[in-house]
Image 1 (cartoon, rainbow, N blue to C red):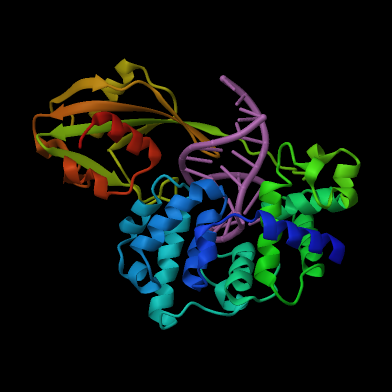
Image 2: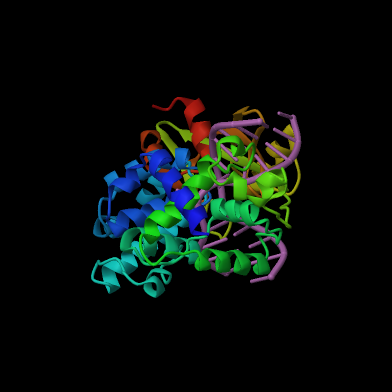
Length: 350
DNA sequence: CACACGTGGAA
DNA sequence: TTTCCAAGTGT
């Protein structure tokens, strides 16, 4: 076993990437990096990390910011609950922990958005505490190397892999150990086309020896997607436009959008226009100017088909009072999902 | 505890 | 084009 680890450490020393969060020992920044990296490729996270810690260099500064500012920095990265929880936890640390990031695993895991993986990652990387951080890379490496075919998305599998990780966890250099295993999975023992030919541990690897890397890791669940149909009203009135905040427990919570009519089925142009009567007061004159093409926006569990309806209103009093009236140049201060951002880009409002 | 939660890159 | 999936967590 120590042979396996020694090879991994050796490999890591030579092949580790020069990543921005590896230049700091600030637990706050380690925390931010780990939240950003959840379900996110390193390459996509780097720019976001740099902008985030530049905008919010300390816990206190983030705690004092508006949630929209935090979401705005997060815009485009997805899984926005991460940003909301990060902000919420920053306020919690600032208000209740004297602004000091907790140094104990059991306190770290209390933070919103921090689960078993992230708590172990922070504890090991920032404080060198020997907690195994078992992420998707490590599931893959272990399943192949040891030939473990228990589904990694089962409760049994999680326990089994955690046990293996705990057993090989050294007392010292926990941060290096965890990062070495993850980096090895990310760069060498990749999901597709793993580089077994020049792998330092392939001679002892179960899957490599059996030429069965494609069978590992085993997953049991497959998610299904549902279709949703969004009709956004882009209402312009001189230099002003109208937006609303998504407040329900749904995708893109607490982010902004143009007034939305959601349908359970695809609508024809005629139906879209007749539906305007539902959304706007029936005695109001609503002029439909143009309509965008159908946009297909794919999420992890949903496919959204969206159209943007350009509307001109004669009387501003027709509009729902809950709509937020903003100067069109200020739209860029609001956190919006990619679907909206892409539409705004097409408008050329700048 | 099964499922929801975003986005984009690679093959 | 389709499919997979990435430093997981909350409910």
